[in-house]
Length: 348
Image (tube, rainbow, N blue to C red):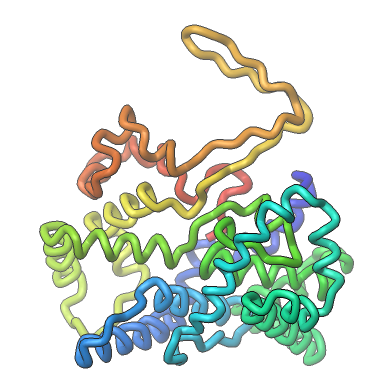
């Protein structure tokens, strides 16, 4: 996507992911966390094994859809956490290379009704139903003109986009369908592993992991390291004297052990994995002690956050989960690129 177009589209969305606006989500986050914890407690009582990653996908989905549309997806209330949808995401992987290399295939799939596409690929039926539901929500916002209410624009992203100063062409339902899709997938089970069949650029441009996968990875590593888990529990007990009251973001964002655990989790399981960049107007000059490199303008460049964040010169013993490496060591912060860097970094 050209830089100017990306900048124009990003601007009205960026404010919704500022720290002050995210803090307004505390009640939504707490409400959904309460549901998630209740499901965990039910599994503990019954001895049932919980599909943790799917449960976390449902949690993050319910939060991001509430923030995007004002209506939750309700996946935490489903017995199976809407498992068919997540299975459809992974089934879509097999289409990724086709869409990357056959330019006309994506527009062709986009032109087909979702019912036809679903009949051609039954394993993806849940994915197409999700896209239909996003279309319905966008149409409801348009027909009700609820985006004209300033209070709605402050609370939900799609209402704000409809009421933004973007040109009308950028606020067409077909265009904002892409933004809705991006918000849902990026906030739930991010693409890269997933190809949206009707939009091949998703596979090409958004090679990411998911917040749910990163959270599941952190939980697994905490359970595998009891001493780290005990230290975290002690910190949380001191910060949350009432164990029955869920904390706000402001209460926990400066806890050193929790912060270090999140940073280490993002290092080992980054959200962004591949980051492609192009300098369209100038050659880039890179100097090393032994050689000078020139990257001609217009040349696509990429790097892997996963490999970079496991470089032993920067992170000794890189495959070991060691949150303490971050504590009292702010110089490492600049090497954490789990959400990418620069003007195309992840909004969230």
